[in-house]
Image (cartoon, rainbow, N blue to C red):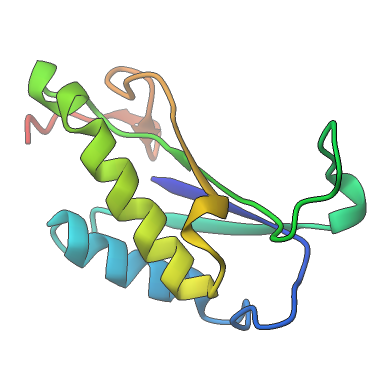
Amino acid sequence: ILEVEVVGQQAGDAPLDGLAERIAMDAGSALGVPAGQLWVTLRQLPASQYAENGPPPATLPVFVRVLARMRDASDTAERPQRAETIAAVVSQAIARERSSVHVIFEPDASGRVFFGGVPELRTH
């Protein structure tokens, strides 16, 4: 699950309509996730509700929270590469600098997510 939060609207940003679908399709393809197994939610935070402790950034940020199951230690070891891939996909989809896309991995989703209230039992 990718939760994408776009801060503000800047000149040159891609339209938000259809953005979640573009990210889902491109991220799924880039990460090798089978169809129907990657979900994307998209929110926009008004720029007036974001601040940094310094001068305003030239490019407003995009935050991406990743909730995924970790099958084994190799999944954790692959996080840096996955973060780079996700940042590149989101950056290209919204047309913001890649350095402004911040990827945050949530704790392992195993035993924490229940689709339709049912435990996820897949091992892959």
